[in-house]
Image (tube, rainbow over all chains, first blue to last red; front, side, top):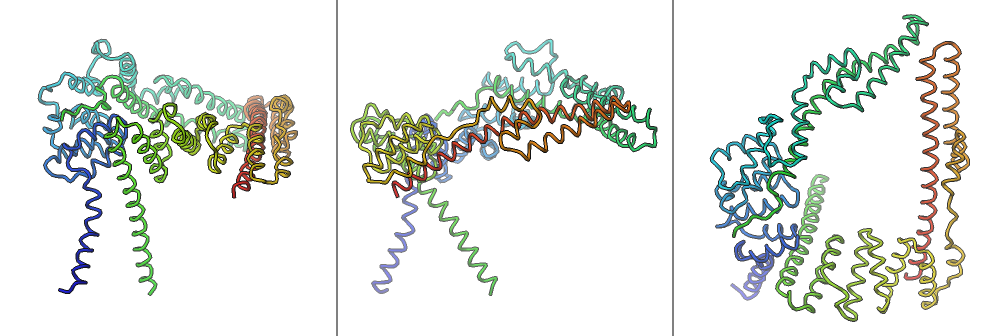
Length: 274
Length: 264
């Protein structure tokens, strides 16, 4: 091998090592614990994620995944957070104390079956009991007269709203709107929409009636106003039926939101134990 | 042959994008390493200041002025001395200006009164004054800097005058008469369309009432006419506000034009 070849070989090795050397500034997650804590205290979460992404997946794979998942949660990248927790073992999540954060994500994404299956054994932490209560609340297990005492007022009032609207019948609401346009909406407490629907139908109905009465059923005037009235009247029925479903869904979402923000343990709190 | 060219062009694009990502990544690595050094130098104030300034500069290169400003907020300029203090104030003002926090930026540039001003500082000072609508301060500062640079200010003095703004109240009162507010504020076309629509619907209402169609007259004549009347009044106010904003923006544009001429 001649001299030039050896020089080239070393040059090649050097070029390969430069980036490796650049990224090997961070050894392992445990050795960089203080720095990661510093980044967390300074609220430099993007930077924290960057550092976590530099560690090779080795002995502490689960811890790494969990730490990344928690950082993703803080950055409101919930999909990535949930996928991170899913890749880690449940035992590790429990061991490192991130159970509440994981459960919060499952609850936020309405993964109630998964949450149920994880909560089959009695939880070791009392705060985790709250997840059982939260799932029961979303499933409307409680009667509104016997709600748990520790629930915040906002959650209680939202539960009552959701409970009431869940008891409403779509068929009955549509029947009401059939008799008096808009009254179906009033039945499930959407006063503003009910009034708008009623007034629009009233205005077109009166004009159609007037046209029929004075110009006759063959007149262009009646055809126009009668046609418009028919469209609005049918829309009123359809809107009432679909609106109730949407109202139920919205109230459920709102209850979930109130529970996550006012009742469940704060997912933003760092629970790490290492 | 074309497909081969296309293939190479695509490869080049991918490589370009990869390079950009790699560049961002290397800057992020720099940020993180600087942060680590800041953590390790918590008790050495002088070193910490240098590191924080470097970190803010790296954020600036990453096009993240918010983060740069947040980084600089960790420094207390009052506890610093001389040129370092001025550098911190300048950088804070610059990043606040870049993210649109103009009042913060103004506070920072006011704090630079004891600092020696070079061209970049002067430029920033003038731009901050413009964005904070400090017209008189801008004018006097511009003239001072222009004189020190032997810049001919004749056209500036002639052109840079605060424009006469339209009186919103006056036009609101005028808009009591259908279409009058729009026409008198210079939007003749819109005014004519507005008044025509009101007249058409009002006329329709009258004709319906006359023939005994009272419901049709009310719901399809009176109500739309009333809506167009209220809409015309609201539109007058919006357009007058917009016109005033445009006049102020024109003045700002003139200011920027003279700043660029002064420091080109």
